[in-house]
Image (cartoon, rainbow, N blue to C red; front, side):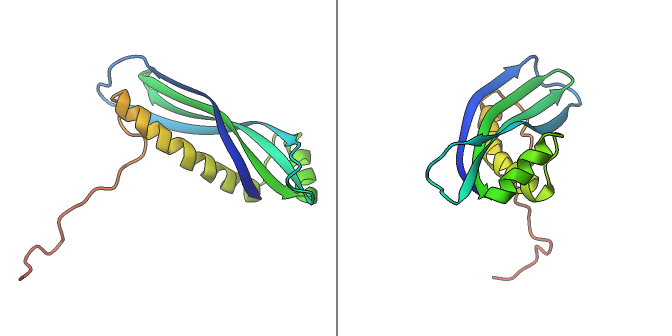
Length: 140
């Protein structure tokens, strides 16, 4: 599966109240639709459009970030038929779902961190932190 396109269609950030006390941050990715996309660039492959929704929810009812968009990928014709057939039952095989979700997460997490900073919300993923060395008795 080769990703050939990505777009956000809607980004919504709503802060309902101040962050106080214990909060819970949950993330969820949903594939809303999978459709064939007509792209003449690839003659031997099919293009599929995966419409998604990525939500970060701060509970209890503190804030919500919602991203909707789509990913377009080029896949072998037989694989495209298999994906669309499974999608009739709202199923996606792991060999498609995992790289697709990782790509969506990579795109959305960067934007989410920016909005969390602007709306003064805790970051939904831990940032790397430096810590002092374990053995602090070194000689220069």
